[in-house]
Image (cartoon, rainbow, N blue to C red; front, side, top):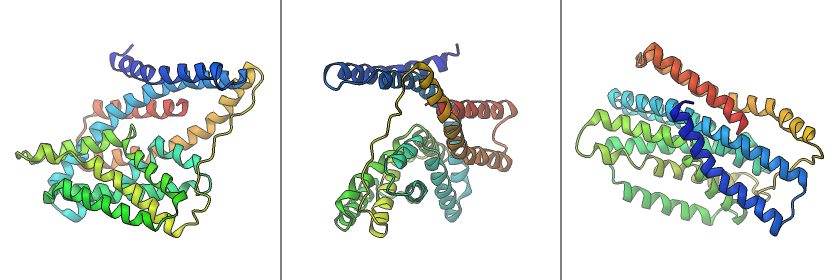
Length: 304
């Protein structure tokens, strides 16, 4: 087995196994769970281990090089409007592909999925662009964060309380397995080109500023959208009686999730091809490696 893949699978197992054991223990001691639900949960946990492992491998070995390469080219452009536009578009694309956002959108059915997803994507894109401008103009990160979180506090006063939880939880999409490697790698790429004494420290803070974007976007959405029913809705667990029912349930949902993941990943693949045609940064072997890993990430995301 590939050492890197083995490492990612072990990381996934370490993350999923304790939660799985705790849930199963609680189902025995405190909250009884019927056998069908327990089997569904266990099978899902196994798929999650493999899915997360392959997904993290793809994110690290495909998204990070792409993010760093784009960061290097952005720093070389020297035209702020072009840099801002690139950062905004890339912020939107990687946010739409983020699996955490898909989960959040499905748990808030009172808001149409696309409305919530694209609102958050615009927020991340706008504030990633702001973070890039901060690096170029060398604006103080602490003062900028203080001003922005002050703005969030003010806007929160005018938003119904039922909407606040969704808004602030949406900030978590910028800590997902796709967004973090890409944004941090982009900052590293920009710092590598600058090469001055403050370049390394200025490359940090991209994720912190990007986290403000989705919160503000959803708060503003709450001011214009009907937020009365903006509450989390529990996921319905299908009733199963036999192991065949379990297999059919997972098999029946697979095409839907494959299509959903494909719609998220394809824009990133398109960006890779466009970036490669414009810069010729990657050699043939590197291109094949990135695409192969990205496709494996697509397949395993369906399992996760």
